[in-house]
Amino acid sequence: MKGCPIQAMLSSDKDCNQKLGVAKDILDLLNGKWKMEVILLLLQYDKRRFKDLQTEIPGGVSAKVLSSVLKDLEEHHIVHRSMDDVTVEYELTAYGRSMREVISNLVELGLAHRKEVIGK
Amino acid sequence: MKGCPIQAMLSSDKDCNQKLGVAKDILDLLNGKWKMEVILLLLQYDKRRFKDLQTEIPGGVSAKVLSSVLKDLEEHHIVHRSMDDVTVEYELTAYGRSMREVISNLVELGLAHRKEVIGK
DNA sequence: CGGCATCCTTCTGGATACTG
DNA sequence: CAGTATCCAGAAGGATGCCG
Image 1 (tube, each protein chain N blue to C red):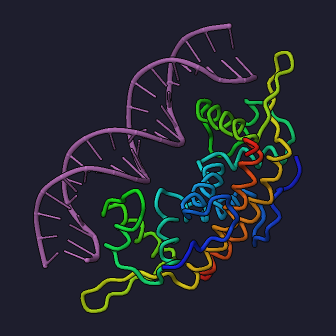
Image 2: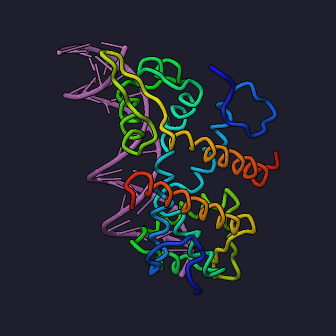
Image 3: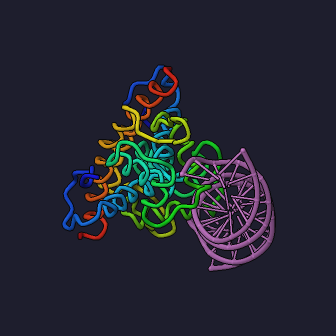
């Protein structure tokens, strides 16, 4: 057995498993049935209200689930929630907009994966 | 509303949601409590037997779960299962080894994320 | 409109025991 | 050793109803 195969820099490199934890942050960030859908919509619209998001997301999300998704994305600084008077609006933060490249990368990787697995 | 924000090439670009499906392939590939742990171990050891993997994975996986993880990774061409006589061994495919860069990327992204979210 | 409360179903993962 | 079979607990997601 050799050292940790993942060469990213970490302050303490005692165990490799901390690195996995860091990687899993990103997986958790995008995983779930609706998170990427929300991000994608907000990339197209700049600002959207709760109800708009709910009706525009293909497939149909329940309010409860969409609510928890937005809360989660907000906690992770991906979206910003603003309340002007009575209207509530969601928009991506600068950081949230950077998810576009992350998702793009995943799509590229995914295309390569499909080629590898089923040659299509 | 503008076009699809994700610019990867896809044969039919009618809807953007196909791209999300492709991206989710990769998330599914690495998601779950143990998949990356298994890949990481196999990156270090080249070949490993079932029982070795089970004991070496920190945290403790049940045989049932490890079994299903390995089956899943095999279906996705990440690991190869070989049975010489009575000994069964698992190793990464060439494609599976390419996951090292994918995970590295995730770690880099994750480090940036932690900086963004908690400034640490 | 923007949710929260409640209840229900499905999916992951875990504990334990058993088999070839 | 390399799993499979059973049973079980918790989380994620969904349906519906209610509230300010």
